[in-house]
View 1: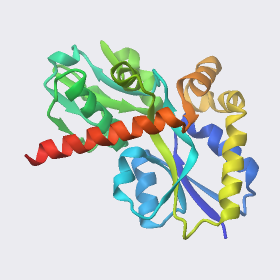
View 2 (view 1 turned 180 degrees about the horizontal axis):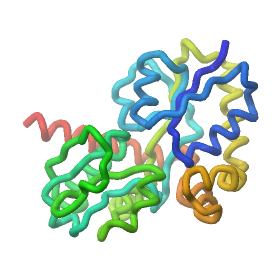
View 3 (view 1 turned 60 degrees about the horizontal axis):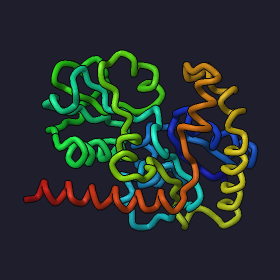
View 4 (view 1 turned 60 degrees about the vertical axis):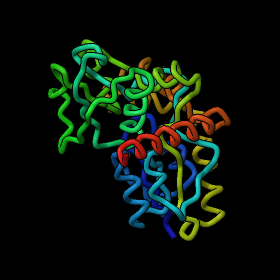
Length: 256
């Protein structure tokens, strides 16, 4: 049976896709490239068997398992998850969230409350229109497009770096999750082999995909080998626990 895998359509997943394509034949694998939130939705609806999902969506699942070795994370600046604004964040009065990632939106709200002490009212716009980040309105922006337009804003806050400054911990944006009823042990081992193979050739992925995502090759190499941290280790597990505690606190505050 063909294994259906959903993962985000950003350059930071290309080492994974390159490795998986080496590990599986075309007849064995179907890759679905989607925005982060849609990866979680596909796994929940059963239209894929495995997905790289935003950690903020983990609370929606009860019957999935996590591949414990790999993730999309950062230990310091990640260069693709930001709050943009034209004024200092302390002077902003509203926050536009990014419809593509609950994880980054949750991270922004936690940091606004505890690091900047400015828990802004927020909204999720129907469209991603970064031109509306102006005046007193700040905005969460993620992905390759955010990296390319960061110089258009007077204030650029890298959320993984701010999290590191506040907690001393790395951050995890997405993890590999699968439905144990639909993924065999052999397929799981084949996936692990593919992910490892891809991560061993991150510079190769940078060279292959840089132009497609509007990076120079040096920019892509730096991003994939330094900005993104792919190992799901102990400090990242600690960061996940702290992140979910922060999310629970936000939810409780809304209920009181």
